Length: 335
Image (cartoon, rainbow, N blue to C red; front, side, top):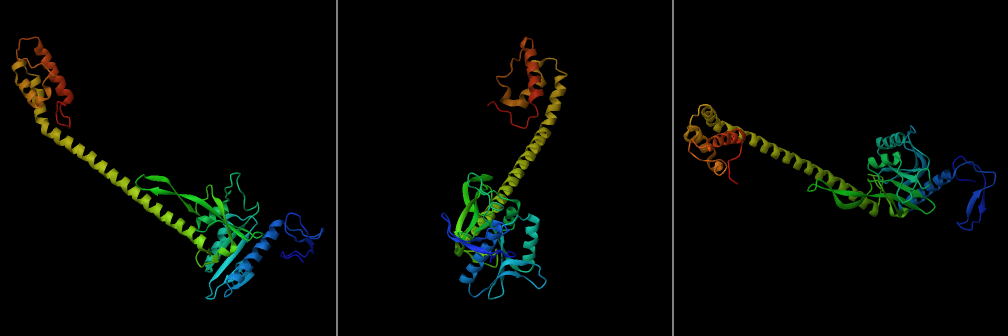
């Protein structure tokens, strides 16, 4: 009889030229999809693997997790100390909300849940370049801390989606060229194929193993590193902003001090401008040359002959320099 739950069709032996010999439905039997067969094979593979490699634990297919029948795991492993890990072989489509409801139900019961998605088209699709085409439910699984995993019961493999995580550097205030293999970056992720026997059930994420633990460790370390470096970069930006603000305020204060110190002289010179009779020997010329110091040397005519035509030139040059330059917040220099 067919092992798929609910199917009572008879099977017959089949010889295949390209694949291994096996069983198949009689011509008039079946009524269920390839995915149903793969699902049953996946459950059988997980049950056989757990029972063989973890003999001190209890392994049961289609077992309810509590007396209320809240959840029925495809395969439920109960460890010697009572710890439980539920394995779900998911070939049929499932929405992110439905997955979260099941995941939360397992967690409320203190059960670690492992989701192994099917290796056929409804769950696993590869782009022409070999990267994984990720579905919203896959993203939901990864967002809550698990790697995205697929099962191939025919080859007894588990495939893990592996991406490249970029390393953030505070000194650059951005990402550098360095990349690390991680499980939480699904853009352009590829599949890493590992034998089922390499894995082991765990209380935390549900599934571990030397290779998978290393992947989780690199993922966690990179996340912590990037969070720390981004915080450092933000602190550096804030510190730089404070320094620039301090410089700006000091410049304003320096300008105010300069203006306060020069204001009496500026007002005196403006008064003298309006009452000059003999500019070449006037107090106005003396005051303005004293105000600017050597800054005016070579810039205006310093002829003190009050009758020379250049006296008017001297006067308007002094006025222009005074109106345009007086009150600047920098020292007057010839350079």
